[in-house]
Length: 265
View 1 (cartoon, helix red, strand yellow):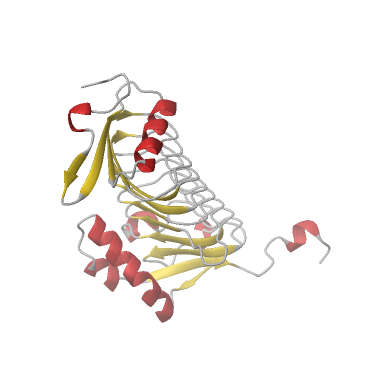
View 2 (tube, helix red, strand yellow):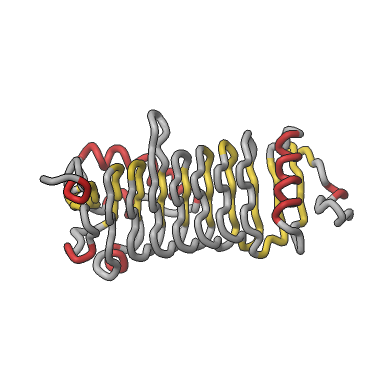
């Protein structure tokens, strides 16, 4: 095994059913050489990059472009997949703050929980979190033309979910009893996109300034069904309870939520 470059040279390039795999041992490695190895592997056409020994390295897969799947064993630090465009990143463990920050396309799948500001300023792609997230999930999410970012949360979320959201979709599938009345500032400053929450209605005290709630329409249900099925498939969950339950959506309370802050009305 050659630890100087971080690759497991005994099986650096594996071929299983036509798939090319690279294994990187990240134990003790700074994120700069780690990302260099990831880019080299993607540039060489690797289908799967398995990274072991991850313990808090920030900025993993930041700015990575192309195809392939990056599998992380351990706990990545902040800003996983920031500015990422294309790959799928799967984390077997928890994740620190802001995975998917300003991500352009691709998928991040977290088999655990994540910290604050998940999907911060995300502008495309998908982030699936099996368990819980921290504060300000989906802050500043946005969309442009055919790019619609999606954040799906399987467990609990904390206050200020979807703060200043300008586009995209946040779908909270957790236990309605745990997500219905404790957190505050949901949708604070929202001026585009939708936050869809299982259960409801929420206590109005939970809503942020400029946010309004309403029952999810039949068309809304049809739109989220394939997302729920995919999420359940990824994490080996039963989708039926999620598909049968009721949902509410949080949207901007008006088309000009900040008008009176900048102009005389």
